[in-house]
Image (cartoon, rainbow, N blue to C red; front, side, top):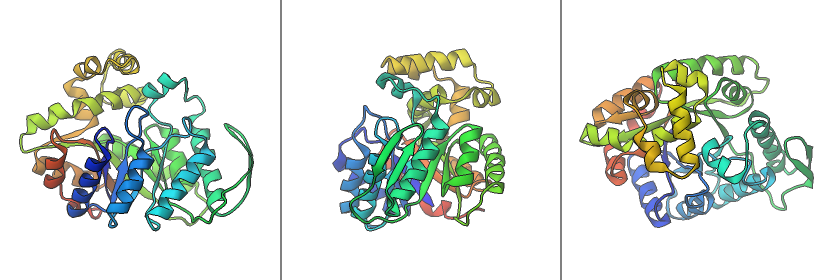
Length: 324
């Protein structure tokens, strides 16, 4: 998979243009990120599917809190149908900073994600579902035919990463630093050792990337996503990079209260080094290729650069076509 992530904080018509440019740059998959305060990713993905027929499409990632998991499975099946079988279901617990605005906690995150994946597969197979776990479904089913859709679980902590390797078709591991990807690879191996089916598995490094001909401008543009990554990072990840947990909590609180500029200003150079790949095209490509010495594939995630259209021109998906 040679994937790219777009953020629906721009008009859908612009997202279509970006997806076309990504295809021209030899990327084969386009994910749209999800936050309630951005445009709806499924509506935008449907629009892209009608205009760009060369890439796979999916949410990166959808969470099973804001939308009932059965409804979420149906939305994904609809996108897959509309795109002639090009759907990829990116599923995960979501961003806890923004979910807190809606009154959701993530205490049951691993079970919720696993149960959503299991129920979705039954629905896509034409089964009717009775489920009583982290959510309830009574005799639920789809009134149309679907197919099994690849499921990629978004993960950052050890338990979610292992679970993805044991049950899913892939993991979208939220990491940009080789140290994190190496650690994740060990968790993936643990999960694969416990796997009891023959589905192929794709270990994808979901890296925050910012590229520009001016490397310093690229680093500056990476502050917003790094703030969100820092806010959602579990303690072991913060400790692995020597990042102050109190500072991370302040960033999390600022994001939850909508004080985004304040959150971005608190991002340190250490956070940038840990949680993004930013610089010139040569620097960025070299670091992404380094990740492929460990991971199976890479998702080039937001912000992409200070000028997204320019970044999509500077990036070359063909360089990320295989593990080196």
